[in-house]
Length: 392
Image (cartoon, rainbow, N blue to C red):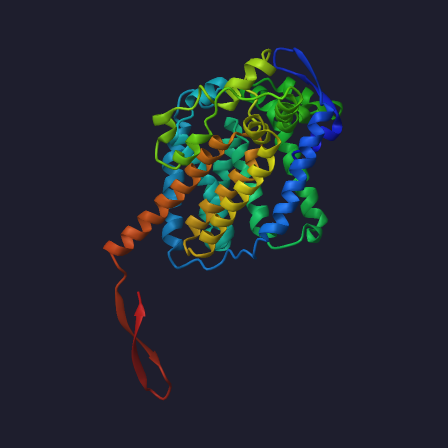
């Protein structure tokens, strides 16, 4: 789906200041698209991923669920009280977004995925709070939390099934969900500022295609790949070496990455007229670093990493930890398309660290305060009883 924009041939984009940008994709980008597709298909046959099981969670689910509920309430309350977080300006929202907000967003995503793994009916309050948090996050202006939750749901449900076996109503529902997210980007600022006339204008039937195009970052981010391949652009410097340190806590603050970030180097050259950011493109980053060889290299690298994460998932019993690892896979596969590699690893790290924190709290609590086994009785009939030990 990510490479679909190439087959459209180009697009017109009108920014918030009314300036019109015209993009025409070039033939050279088609060679990169073909190589990327071939690499992906080859990886499927070479690595042959085994069936992935998501069950095997333990009785600690209720403890983890309780911690998730408390974290959503606490960090959600702080987020609601954060100045500027509900501003109609994207710049103000991003400046107001810190580590606490990222913890809240990840708690909502993990809580949603946790419910799928541990059972919706057993964790209704958690599901309710997680869903409310995702809606709040969407209103703030971050569509990614809801999109990642939907993709995690699809991953769990269809990881072991053929795509041909997916029911039509689920496909239609998925298309409608992502169409909604695409259109929402073009109206959320107007909604937050109270300009409902503009909202109504942009959701009119004759404006829906334009509104959806504005929200479909694939068209803009694919332009990165088109420009990089067409002009054979090479990055002057790269922060790929920082990926090895990305799972160290606060490494993004310690090392810093802005000067050699993909977007910071590419946007001034190819998108000088854009006032805001234009995301990034993982395929363009690897082409700009390694040429055509970078495309299969990226596929091999991500395949091996995800296979390793799935092996861990099969060997842990914590629903929270499983959820965090599943979310990290979404960051490193589906959602990586509009990022650079370091950014994707940092996002995956945040999800895993939240899950590890929850798992660690439960583990320490159980070690320090083990459940006491108490004697109990059961009837064997005819007035005979037998004492046995049962967990409290």
